[in-house]
Length: 458
Image (cartoon, rainbow, N blue to C red):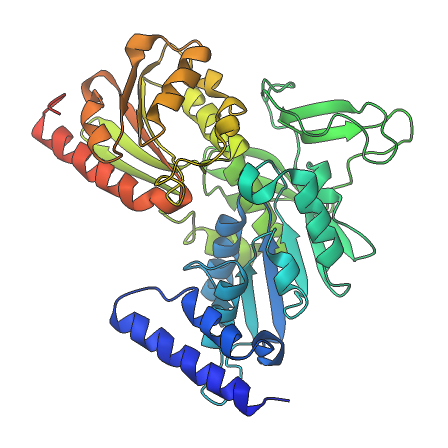
């Protein structure tokens, strides 16, 4: 039952949203914090949409949640989402209170909520997803997330019994969050011409999670992602009811149960293939037809905050998210860069914005990321910008990159002046989740030089 304290918290939070809008701020987190401080039971009492869809995981949850939201909206559904940010308790509280009126009535029948995997234990007691998709579980920031099995244990303990799970069949750690929940799987089959082995430094699943004996990888795509079996106890990667089987020339073919369907391909990176396949699996579970999903995918794609490409004459500048302190996310981007044809230059701006002031973050992740992928003849230059630029220089030298290819500058935006764009066909700008503003500044500085024809004028 809603109390006077609840209504005071609701109205105060609504006023905070309005005030922040007037200040041209997104108001993604603070209003929810206010509501919870004024009424600790606020999230429990708050009216919620009839259908709640949660998307969690280490990498890809923002892309999948936004893609699902966009397609549902495109198909005429009224959807509440936290696409502007705020995937922890305060942010989720904010987006849900946005969905209610001044008297507490819910105005949305459906919500798609990106949920931080570590913070989920605080959310699940009061926001119980009807559907919960887990993209993957990988190593992330040591300071925040410790290790992937720790995050797995948080999810496993907290997931509500009512939630229908959609899990990545190619990731045994993500599969391990299943308890007695109704569960289905998505994945990506070995694609034509895809190499059988992975070259990564780290692999977090080498022993069977069921009996502890060594696992056999029938196919390893990268790190611990692939199809495996245990010769001792018979454990196998689960069957993927929704599985991508072919991706090329802008077309993604996905097998749903026993039938293969074609969809527009939103990106040619393997992570894009996984994210699109995950979204398709969730949308079919929600009742959308293959035709509806394919039709909407022609109009919906990856948001520019994750990937963007600008043409300048016969050259291109690509902005690509590469989550700092996340070795697997960075390795995936490095792998994508080395497989991109032509001569390339790379500008690395992945310092964590919150830690940059104190440089207190454990930098061990840099030595777990596969910087060796950047040691290629067609990668003609690598520039590192930010307070840890010398750490990246050391790592690149350890990876075998010649010293003459490496440039460093302790500020992100001026680092763009070191990029020799005349020597490259494609310039990649890599940035962390919270440094996109710096990356945009560096991009504009680089584009100004390119359009003015100035090569190196720092």
